[in-house]
Length: 281
Ligand code: PDD
Image 1 (cartoon, rainbow, N blue to C red):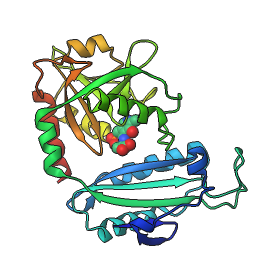
Image 2 (image 1 turned 180 degrees about the vertical axis):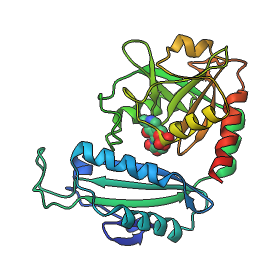
Image 3 (image 1 turned 90 degrees about the vertical axis):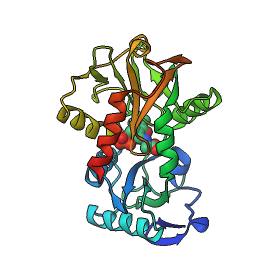
Image 4 (image 1 turned 120 degrees about the vertical axis):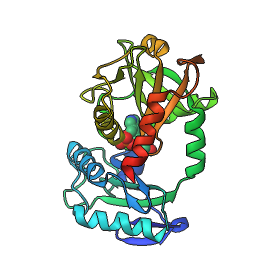
């Protein structure tokens, strides 16, 4: 495997970052994960728009132009012969003597790009059976709309899910509303057939997959509500599912050990996943 690190393509095993990189010391950086299908980047423009937004929110100067970054992403995908998989990019505030405040303005940002294949068959098998989620109290900072590499609460939540035999953890805010998963957005389908997901103005990352699924669901004529939902509502729902570039639409069959609907992937989630495949082709 090959990684791109600050202007050079290097063997993955030798790809390294300085010990005083601010991403390493302070999680002072942002990232994106973009799906690769048939060798092409899916929704690259939207991912790069969000990267710009994250960088802007943290006042990190983009390390290169968008056109140059697109070339690097494509070249990294090519050099790793990824047809179906993911490309990961991370930008940090660069290398400087450890000091919490920003380093001198001329400190260049660090940029890393990696790409890897995903096991398509395993993903499809998982989607056919559905996944379990657990719930945990929301304990992240309020700016989760910025895609920062500061993911410690997400890491701990995902590990708790794994130890409970589940795939994802849903954070629940002080008002009792589900915000999102540790690395996915959260959705339910009510008994009446309405698709519900939390608005992207507070408490969640505005997922690119979320945006695409909203567009697809609208085009298919489903009733849609962007509003917060409670765990009780999720337990009473006909269906639940999660979305992310890494999993697309993934049916949820149980929440905290309690079956959702009939405990099998539901028709809405299954249809949206299929539509997502068609859309991405
Ligand atoms: N996670 N919410 C959180 C907290 C996420 O980390 C992600 C993505 C999403 C879904 O966003 P998108 O549809 O743009 O992938 C929602 C990536 C895949 C990750 O951390 O690996």
